[in-house]
Amino acid sequence: MKKYSSYIIALLFCHGCDQCDNNAYKQEEEKGYYTKNLYKLDKIESFETTITTLQSPDEITKFRKKLADRSPKWSVTGTEKKPYRLWISFYNKAILENIVKEVAKKHDSRLLENFFKSFGKLFKEPTEATEKEVIASLKKLKAHTTLVAAFKECIAERYNKPETIYLSQETLEYEEFLYFILNESNKNNRRHIKLKKLQVNLKKWKKDGLPSGEELWKKIQEQEEKEKRSLQNSKIYRYKENQQAIAESLRLINQLMHDPYSLTYKDLLETLPHGKNKLENILDELLENRDHINIQSLKRYLRIVPDCL
Image (tube, helix red, strand yellow):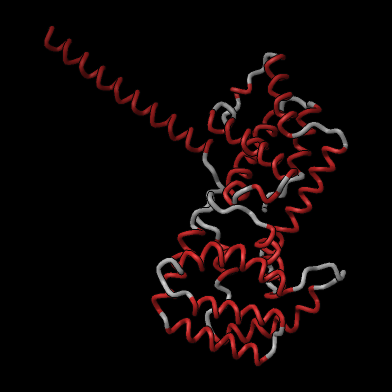
């Protein structure tokens, strides 16, 4: 009998272990579901287009014609920056400092610099003569396969790390102009416009004497605690990862009001929308049970921030 009892106990113990493992797995699975970041960035795709716009003589010809046709349409009010000024500011900030000088550490970069110099002339004079000069520079550059490979490798290495790349006025202004010239419907050509509009709206919110998102969220949490209602009932709020994501998102929104160029691309395109999305879902849950002024105000505040930056 003892023998069988031991066997039964062993079976029950093993079954209990399996049950514990099962529960732990389900909890991890649930946590992964509720904390998942839907905005994960691998690289900054727009930079590949922005920096390596022209790869062949045909592309150079098409681009030159678009420049000649659409550049005059760029200046609507007369206050817009000139095409060449936009290009050279972007080149000096994003390409010369971060890429060309890096390539030059191991290679003779003169062919690369000559290509960009001739390319810049297109923005001043989008003529056939200038186009031929750019094509000739491109042919010389492409003949130096090692240099081209180093250039592309440097671009990939730098722009596959969105957490290290800060937004810059020079890059955003050039992107806005570039996609205007290409006449393409692309979210990147609206990013600078959206950021400037967002900053204006956030400053107006503050000027109107309204509490910031951080202040409203703190009031909501304090009110929930005071009225003995637990936010922990929310499957999103209960995870610390989401609470931290919300706090970071609200901090970044407030930072945008002061200086939109102080954020990295990861801040703007991954961290900020992730926390904002979690908070919006929590507020929707709260509104199912009560209609509180702070909850409504925070929802209005979040609506100032576009879903797609």
